[in-house]
Length: 103
Image (cartoon, rainbow, N blue to C red; front, top):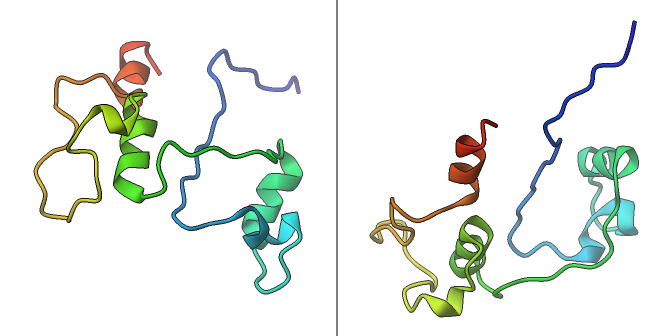
C-alpha cells in the first residue's frame, strides 16, 4: 500500500505555561517522567532554542494567535477569566487564516 500524502502541513503546537527546557525527560529531566512528550520528541523534530514574546500567559498567547507583539496592545496583560475580549472578532488570527485558506 502506498503511503498517504497530504499537501497540508502536519503541525502540532503545544503551548505550556511555566515549562522549561529541562522539565521534559527527553531533554534530560530526571525529577518527572514525560513519556508522551518524549514519544513526540523521538518521532519528530527536536527544537533546542525557544523564544517568548512575553513572560506571562495572556500576552504571549495574544502574540501567538495574532502575530502582533503584545506591547503594541495596551490591554494585552494578564487578564482574569471574566475579562472582555482581548482579540477583536474582526482581528486576523492563525485559526482564521487557516479557515480562509481551506485548512
